[in-house]
Amino acid sequence: MLTDSVRRGLAAGLLAGLLAGVFALLWGEVPLGEAIALEEQAHAAAHDPAEAAHDHGEEFAVSRTAQQALLPVGSALLGAAYGGLFGLAFRLLARDSGDRWRAALLFGLATWAAVALFPALKYPANPPGVGDPETVNARTTWFLVAIAASVAVAIGLRFVSKWLRRKDWDDVPRQLLIGAIAACVYGGMFLALPANGDPVEVPADLLWDFRLASIGTQAILWLGLAVGFGWLWHRAARRETA
Amino acid sequence: MTALTTVAPETAPNWGRIALTLFALGALVFLVAFEQGALTGGAPVLHEAFHDARHLLGFPCH
Image 1 (spheres, chains in turn cyan, orange):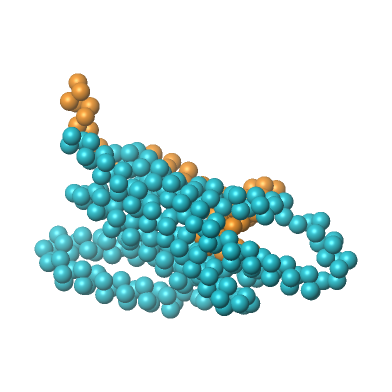
Image 2 (cartoon, chains in turn orange, brown; image 1 turned 120 degrees about the vertical axis):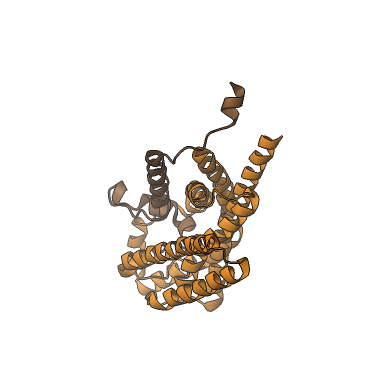
């Protein structure tokens, strides 16, 4: 059962990650390429030509073409890893649900909101050239704190909700209460987490296009994972009854 | 015999296997999304290889 759930998660995540990578290649690479061009322009303007030529020697070890080709590979690997973890979490947290298709969709929606959407709203993705290398460790730490806190709150709310259901609360007041607590806690965390203070010096429309592509890529990965996972469970359940 | 194998009993979770799965998948996430060159002798090979994927999946980058 556990192995089945992890295996289905790995398969659904690999495919969803690949799909997200193709989307990112088609829509995300445009603003990403523009940001790199701007970064190189700024870099060239800041140095005299002799120094710029010197800089060229210590350029990327991995070419831009290879970086683009590895984009769907990276997203597929990450999708598979997320999928396996998703399958594990589904097995441990949502196993008692009767309808696995519906349960997987709801669980996937909640996971996407907690793992990807909330951190992306608090610490939105930035294109290349934005971000002070000095602050990368602090930014990475706060990004991970945001994900961990967000997931912990989501799991906590699930347990409160199950507890209230065992206390024979009706669905509507129970869901209203859980929704209100979620809004307050997530709102409070959004205000309490420190802001990313790095200056963003790229054009606003480029930034918007990049962040939209980033949110889209993550939504395809997580929601695609949920749909694929739910479908695999549904198919397995149909086979069992047949 | 077939009846016994098709109805799998509900066993207790195997915590060893869960820990191993968590570790392996966590390591994969770390390598794709966060590793900055410490494992490749200081040169950020994985950082550069997954550069575009990291940016578009929203991970903090340089």
